[in-house]
Length: 329
Image (cartoon, rainbow, N blue to C red; front, side):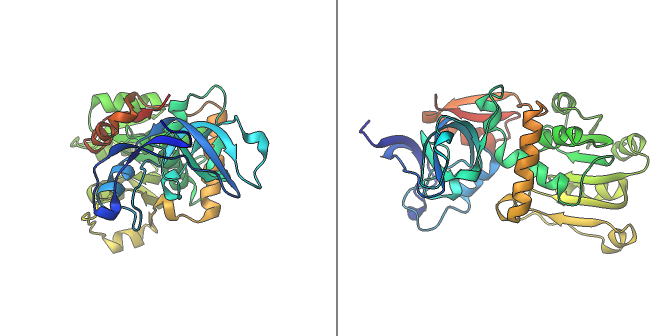
């Protein structure tokens, strides 16, 4: 490899091409207020393959995917404390900046988007934060603390669901229930700390949730509103908040307006990339607090090398249970 270059997984949105290839590209340099991170582990999320295939960045000849990752700061730009060089960090929204995402040996991003990773936290755990943990933190906290509240996490074995269960427990939720689609996923939700685990396909799913939380659910972390709204309304308490964080382009939910009005429910939607700056900062700080306390853990890891990046994206697209990472060490 030539001096001043790095290996990166790339695709060509300018040509409408979503195929990933391994290329040698220029190593990015940090500008004012930026840091460069030597990536150890890159995390793969559904947003990564969806962006690549559905909404590729406009105007870029080559794009490097993957928003999340963890590694070590090896250079800083003007205005950044030089003492950060050598710091272990987890990163967020890396693919939204000029140098591209974490599917590369190095990435450059704003100083505050490289967050200190405790020495006892693995790079795999660091690469599992970003999109999943910050989404979970935002959903849990946007309408006030969950301390003393009943929380229902839809898809408790997924990356966001896993983080939501652990964060809700850390932040003092009274009861955390999770819905899953089978025993194996139920074991993952239980390991994360869910008090109650319910197969959402069970004929008595509503009754099971009501038995666990007789006063109703206060906060819903919802992965599939179009499928789950009826169940959510059946178990919601007065003044509950349903926060939906995922959907496919064609998903449509029929909202029974009067039922929501009668119970004074809030139906909220979020996309991490467009949340207000103050809310994102709050989510980062709360995630960091839970991480420092040892309250966050990684899902089972599916490990790929950088030259297997296409297979890593395919695994996530095909619904791999656990966390898919690309190891660059």
